[in-house]
Image 1 (cartoon, helix red, strand yellow):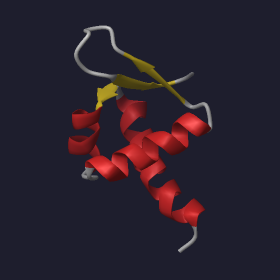
Image 2: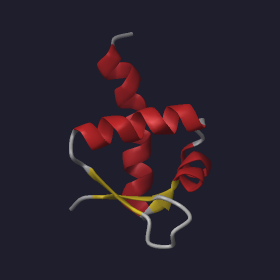
Image 3: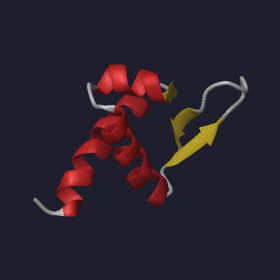
Image 4: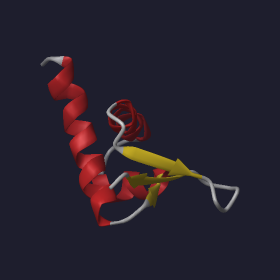
Length: 68
């Protein structure tokens, strides 16, 4: 399996979850069924492509959202 397929699968699952609503890391884990490491790889891929925003409005948890 090449890197595009490997990381792309995680990124696709994370993207679909974020397309429903903004989510924290733990919410992404629950909604995708991925591990912390897999969600992080998916987020990294999406961040590299400029497709996500990260906020910390409550001061506790990072929240991820899709850029429109």
